[in-house]
Image (cartoon, rainbow, N blue to C red; front, side, top):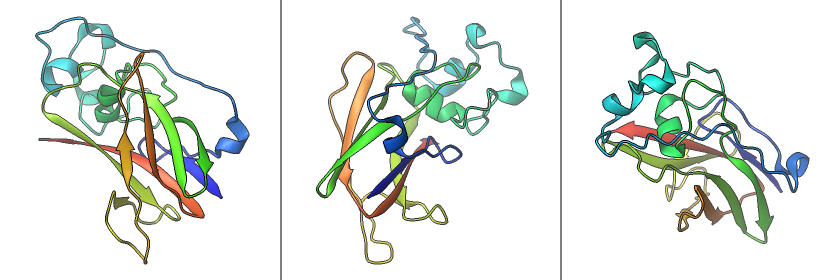
Length: 164
């Protein structure tokens, strides 16, 4: 079984190459309870982003995590972040971990998508070419969350964030 991860779609890796390693980028905590929407969060002075780099799908630090995903993960969109952390497969179940923002923007929704070969990403629970993958996000702990799901022979995973 090959299990690959992406956040959102530009960096994939094989967990066999990262076995036992946890690699995370810089974590960012706003610490300001008034920052509730994405527009307020992305303009946080600590990020130092130019207005042209503040869009939901922009990736000013070039780490493959767009600003929406950076918000969901609680990472700084102006500094490289690893994204999804390597996972494991047991039988027909996979598990992976990623950072999770304790107070994400209230106008964003994150979801997981899957692909058999990178050409088409499909939403969780939707049948594509006779297969379907489901995801269950566990209880966050220590700024991280563990996600489990249905494994396929070859599987690519992406995080997608949309604005409500």
